Length: 213
Length: 415
View 1 (cartoon, rainbow over the protein chains, first blue to last red):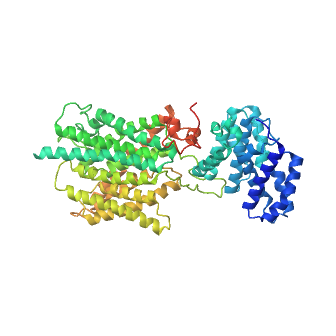
View 2 (cartoon, rainbow over the protein chains, first blue to last red):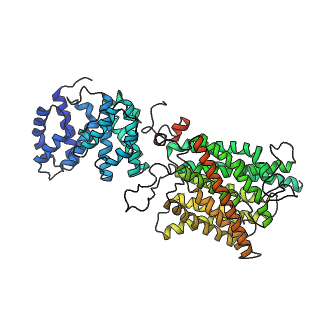
C-alpha cells in the first residue's frame, strides 16, 4: 500500500468533511469557518480520525447544528467508503483482513443501533452462542474483550483481531444473533449494505468481505 | 369414438392438467420464498414429482387400488406392467395425485430442509402414507373389494381429505420436526413475553406467485373434473363449482383481512382461493353452485384464521400449506354432509365425515412425525444455520437463481 502525501490527504479529507456538513444543512459560511480546525486536527493526528473530528467540530458549533454522535457516524461511514483516498497513518501496516473485518463489524453494529437501539452485544450471546463455537482460546478472549469494550467504545474504534477461520465462525454467529433480534429479511439487507460499503475499501481488493460469509 | 375411449381421453387430459399443477406449485412456492432459496424450491418440486411417480407406480398404486379383501390395504397391481388401457390411464391420473401430496410438503418445509432428506420423506409419503389412507377411502379397482371407510359411507369425491388433508397433516408433522426458519419468530426474553410473535418473511417474486396460483386454479379443473373417471355430463357442474369455490375463497380471505384491518396481502388472497379449490374437491359433483361459492367463501376465512392460529404456536409453514390443504380440506369434507341438495344437513353423514377426517389425522400425523423423526436421526433433515444464511440454492445445489442480482450475500466459492 503506497502512502499519499499528507497535503493531498488533508485536502481530500476536507472535501469529505465539507460535503457531510453541507449535506447536513450547515450554511456554507459556517463550513468555511471550520476549515482551520480541520487543518489543526490533521497536523496533530496525521490521520482522519472521526472521533476527534466530531468532538472538535461539535465544540466549535456548540452542538447546535449537528450532534457529535450523528457527525461521528457520518464521518466513520465516509472513512469506510473513501478511506483509500485519505491514506492515513492509522492501521497502515495492519493486516487487510483485520481491517476489512473490523470495518464490516463496525458498519453492522452502527446500523444495528440505528435500527433497533441495540448498542452492544449482551452477555447472553456469549453464554448461549459464542461459548459453543469452535474458536481458538485467543480468539475467545479477544471476542470477550471486544464485547466488553463495546459498552463504552464506539464500534469503529473497537478493534478485534481474529484468525481467518475464526472470523467466519464469529461473523456467522453474529448473523444468527441479529436474525433473532431483527428478523432474517432485515439481517440480509444489513449484511448486503455492509458488504457493499466495505468492498469499496482498497483493502477489499486483497481481502474481499464476501470471503467471510 | 366409443364411451371407453372417450373416458380414457378425458382422464388423460385431466391427468395432464393435474400434472401442470406441479408447475403451479413450483412457481407459487418459488415466488413465496427468498431469492436465495428459489432454485432449491424449484428443484424439490421437479424432483419429488419424478421420485413420487416412480415409487407410486412401484408400490403406492398397488397399496391404494390393488385387490383389498381386508379393506385396509391393497395386495396386487405393484409394478404394473400388463393391464387394460383404462387401468393405464387411471394409473397415470392417480400418479399425478400422489405427486400433488408430496408437493404439499415442499412448500411448508421450504428454506430449511435438506434436499435429499426432503426427497426421502416425500417418497415415503407418496409410497406409503397417502396410498394406505387412500385405500381405505377409494380402494380398490376390483369390484369384489373395497376400503373400510368407503364401506362405512365416507365420501370424498376428489380428495379434500384423501389428497389435501393428508398432505397438510404430513406437512404439519414436518413443520414441527424441522422447527421454524432462523429469526421467523421473536425471542422470548423474559416472563413478560408470553408468546413469540411471528415475523413476516416476504417472498422474493410475487408475480411468479400470482402465475403459480393461476396455473394451480387451471389444474383444479382437471383435478376435480377428472375425478369422475369418465367423460360424463357432470363435468360441467364440477367445473362450475370448482371455479365458484375458488372465487369464494379469494373473496372470503380478502373480506376476513379487511375485517381484521390487515393489509390485503397477495399471498393471503391466493391462499384463500386455493383453500376454496381444495374445499370443493370432496363435493364438487353434488352440491349446487351457490353452495359451492359459500363453501369456498368459508374456506377462505378458515385459511386466513388458521395461518394465524398456526403462527401463534410458533409453527413456521413457509407458504401456508397446512392451512390451505389441511384445514380447508377438513371443511370441504364436512360440506358433503351439509350441502348435499338431496339431503341437507345430514347428521349421520356428518358423523361419518368427521370420523373419516379424524382417521386421516390419526393415521397421517403420527406416522409422518415418526418418519420425519427417524429420517432426522439417520440423516439430519435440517440444514445448518450457515447454509440458511447462504441460502439453500448455494448450499444444496451450488447454483443460484439470479446471479446478476445476488452479488452481495453470495459466498465467493465452494469450500
